[in-house]
Amino acid sequence: MAKELELAKKLAVLGWIFRKGLITEDEYSRTRIHIMSEYDVITFMTA
Image (cartoon, rainbow, N blue to C red):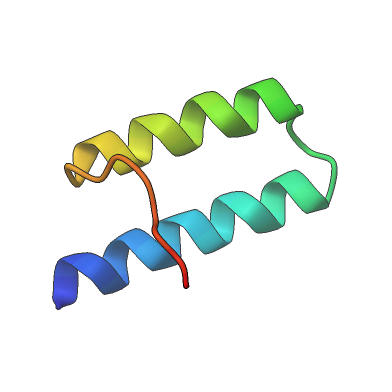
């Protein structure tokens, strides 16, 4: 459970940085993929 929380925090911060306009959409996408791959996550499935 701790790894999931750590991943969620990193993605939340990344999203905040993107929404503030500090990084481009391309940088956001590449960084998000990199972070998720560190946690062996391919994609999030939502209902």
